[in-house]
Length: 271
Image 1 (cartoon, rainbow, N blue to C red):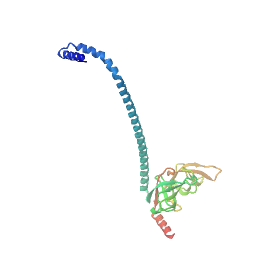
Image 2 (image 1 turned 90 degrees about the horizontal axis):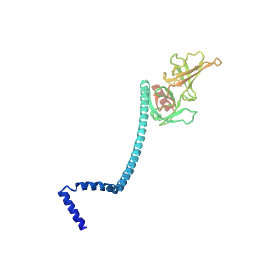
Image 3 (image 1 turned 120 degrees about the vertical axis):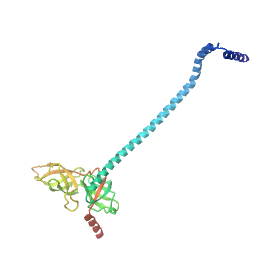
């Protein structure tokens, strides 16, 4: 050990004072480099594996986070689209309310009768808001039906498409008076007892005639979509598509006028 120490000191002194060992140092560096690389390779391999595992774990976590974020963004987008559509429907409904001369109340559908033979819906307005039996119900496009039952907080509405419902109408073009009755299908009304010579055509607009003192005059009811004449039958086969979106509307208008409100209040006092 002492001899090696003396040799090391001598070599360091010679290397410091002269440059004669520069070539020897270069040769030794070349010879020792493989040994250093081999000696360091296990550590570098372990470090590389650790980094790879950590990177894969981080990437997997990032992918999961991005997938969750994408799912939330999709849900928010769908909700925004739904809210936009509902906002547009409410704008159309309120626009229709502004065109009416009568007082109106906006209500929301909260239930549908599960019986396919009964076309009835439940709305969130009742006698507390002075809703009364027989009150006309509209959406942004036209007449939907009428209130048939009221409670303090809700009311039941019979739709035009119900087979037990009928409404007096007239053809806007020719003023021909007819009766539109529900067919049991949400997108079809049957026109009753139409004479074969009646002035009615496909595309004619049907509006409420006001007869019977139930529905005010002039509300859109439907558009004629079929007129067929059978020589063997006394009446023509005529059907119409409802103007109102009976199976899709969520918000409706309850129509008031002074005469109906007074009548409803007097009926309540008499009872």
